[in-house]
Length: 426
Image (cartoon, rainbow, N blue to C red):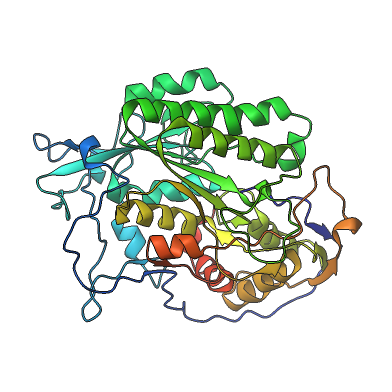
């Protein structure tokens, strides 16, 4: 989940492009592959029922929404999980999103009546601790996680990007991590915080290691002590990019720089901790929030008529909303599983191919009024402080099979992202 800076060069001038609009496609970017037959036996859950706390005495507690193991039922084929962005053509995700506990506070206006919990006897809710609520993925997790239960969010300074307040947690100070987790007492910790400045990490290796390795180790140790589960995000940068086929989870790792090495050290510490965990490796993350390749490509056409973009690095562009929705779906599925999984869009392209697709699709929906020429260059023509993997495609077969999920191809996911409501771009 590294930053994509250094993949594009720009030229000057500008030329016009007529607008064309079309109706948003009705995509189903994430579908379950359930057989449609009800299970006779309840599977053990990553959300361990022994860790779930009955909360019957306060049914209107802010932020508490019952976890349903199956999101929506469709007829004929049985249980189908349909998740997507809250766009003009798909309001599902927006309707599902419940209140997020900002520290210990949550607006009363966001309260809703609890629904019965499917799959467990009695009334049960869970508490989730989301670390890093202001990042690209964290921002989307603030939407995707509330249907699972009460969500307590952290940021480095205790402030959220929308102006709200939350818990403060700086992963640059690993010694503070355990106390906060013990105070919040979550059932699940989702760590979406990381040091992702790939080039700067070469000059700040100690800080990168504290944030990406030492703090995840402390988080995992606290989870192991308390019996909580941990979801942690990692990166394609744990590989050297010399592969010729999509990387599987058990392929040898060989990071090229400090960033990848620090993320790999974090993975290894979590695996040693004994905590129940999901380590989700992802790559080429983008979205309408924060700084990323997509937003750069949407900004530059108003300033330049020529872009030079790296064409010899290959990967799978993956929107932050997809990572968040799959994370929620994996938790909702309730599999008694620990390990590493690859989570990216399917298919592959280069940065140059991704840039061209952005220009084409953004023009289709009227987001661009000018379209620059997009010219291919090599990595050698645009050297960076840290080496990038030339091949970053990850094999998602294990995740798809084990959690019965079908992931969208990268181009469909891009179209879905660009059809999001304008208010989501910030």
